[in-house]
Length: 440
Ligand code: SF4
Image (cartoon, rainbow, N blue to C red):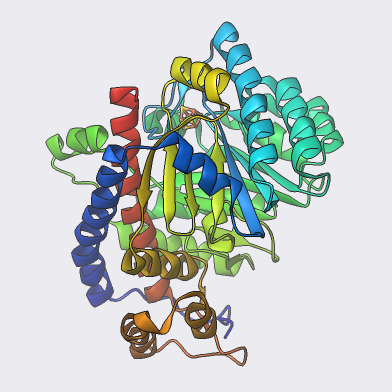
């Protein structure tokens, strides 16, 4: 069911209250999962066997490139380090080696899409391109590649290099379209002019051009967000992804001291304003955050890929009921890959109810839940939990379309899914912060 552009967008106070009640429950549950993962010993032999005997299936591969321009962004909750030439070279060499190891070990895995994130993968565009070319030689020439980039790295030459490596999706971290807001966010290494030039150089040159925007900063209000969203959509990219600020626990503590809590006091009004601008400019939600003008690759590969592998520091993988995470330290990474080919350091067996909740949350985030897919994916033993979740969707007035799936378009549901995904990512951020601090 598609929304009509003239439909008025309403987010009810009761929805906001449900969101407030939901987030601590979800964040705690996710933190609990990652706390167990942080303590889960990895048995090298068993890990090798699992990767070696993966079921024949389609997989996404996440590749982490952790180096960034300085100063590092104040709001950042990713695993990233200031660029250092020697470290960078050693890291990229190890990354190619780990990719080769994975391609030769996971023989039955069909890698369909590679998502390169960071950090700032574009920090050395030639090395990025060389990595993509070698990944194609390991995993097959037809893999789709999505990469993130900083506006200051993207110009005509960079676009031509990325096109020669057949990048299909380029995502530029624009974040804000007012220099004062960039400064307020603590994004100090680029200016609005850099973003405009980068988008102009890349527009129409890739299957999908995405720009990332941030909202929910201290000084944000409805009027500011209206102007910012409108400007972002007017840049005419294929997608605009509106990420809420998601502070890691250390930053959350800072916020608490300012008596603000992890949320913006006008969270729902800001989100509603974004949706209003999105619909008025004929973009539609592909997720609660990603606004799209067609059916394209989106940032959250977990929506489309139930199973995904990861290389590079801090990469988290889910393969069936098994999860693993790679080391967070660049020095350890280079040594581990040199010694045994892979960088995983912790693993966890995921229980089935956790697996169902995870699976359904990813489908909800992608705004499409198909009961038949859930029933096919899980056994009858879990029928009770599955029926409960489907009944909940019905009670929320989401109608099943002709394909038998629930397609989520209601702004209240979108807002709740925004809260759900934000809460999940905040739990992940707690884990990332643990990894950065402990240098595990
Ligand atoms: S927000 Fe992006 S560019 Fe800024 S420090 Fe974090 S990873 Fe680097």
